[in-house]
Image (tube, rainbow over all chains, first blue to last red; front, side, top):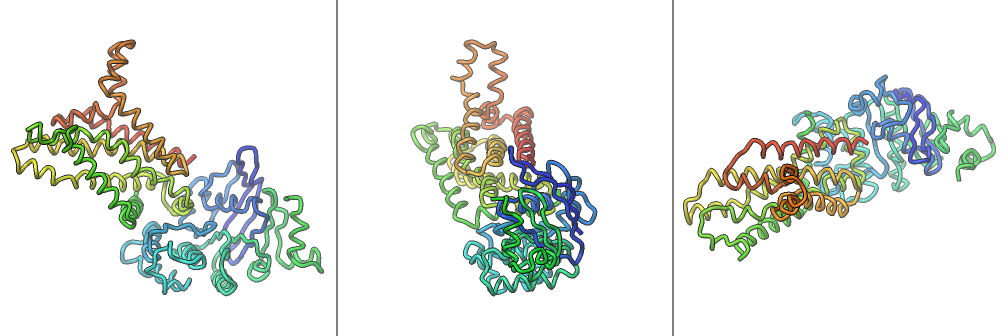
Length: 239
Length: 241
């Protein structure tokens, strides 16, 4: 379970995140929407303990990220935007490294790596270096890395970015299948994705939460309009 | 503390996954040996079975070599975004800083130790004082650590490897020049001798020279160790900022 309370982050004179609060329960897939620069990634980075909030905090299973970031990081799987990874390593080496960092000792590393490779269908490229992989595969490696330790909570920053329609579909199915026992937050620009897999939507605009409801409720605001038209009318002030 | 090992292994292995390591090692050995054998070094002309003429150039070679090895430590992680991955894994900043530092230091140590054929040559041609020789190697390794601490710190402050390199170079140069006799004489011209001495005490040369003469003084060891400790502490602060 992820609980976010009054998070604030300021860059210079710009308030990137301005008092964001919400809760994600086990079984929830929360779609995090908003125009570019609205504060989605910043919020996620604060939840994962990468950025320190100026005020407020995030709690994962009741642990305060500002007090015990390492304990929170153990419970989280995080896919950063663009899935950064070390280009000179092979997929296998990279996942072994992540497993070791996650505290799996020599023999115990095999099973989680196998599981992550299986779930994300990385078998064919296991021994290729990351710099030679296509965008889709790189994204999947980022996914595998986030899932490796079977975390109770997942934070995914644009998980389907750069994938072709088939791969998008595959990733969505994967997230959906896992979600029953996990709390998932995913940010996206694609509204159909939210309709397809999320059971909650948060729209964030200028660092504030403007909508927190189910996709059906969001649609009900303007029953005849398409979802992206609803989105536009809610975030128009942001441009 | 337990997570230092994987950071170390990845970083150290990283040097050898690309041609970088081999280029560095070759360049370092060729340049350092060539300087010693040249007419500036006078390795053979001196007619003494010691590596003093070889180690004499170390503070100068390190001035370029160590920033080149250290510049990528953090700048590269920042530029490629992997720093976000690293710091969302369950490790502390301290673990990461120490792991990376030790990896780069081990690499530098490897470079220094690979000059062993020269020591063997000296042993074959004459009868060197092996104590002095080992002492010089230990001093060189400690000095590399001191330089590296500075470079790791500057690398943590910027995304750009070039900026990191230039700033490390300047910082190391400052620490080097403080000990040159020309510079201390200049200082003594207008500062009390005590103050000038104190300033030159912050130099790599002052502390490294003793090692090459076979003197192991705890204060020289402390100098390098405390320089490393101080820069690595600032390194953690810079990353947590």
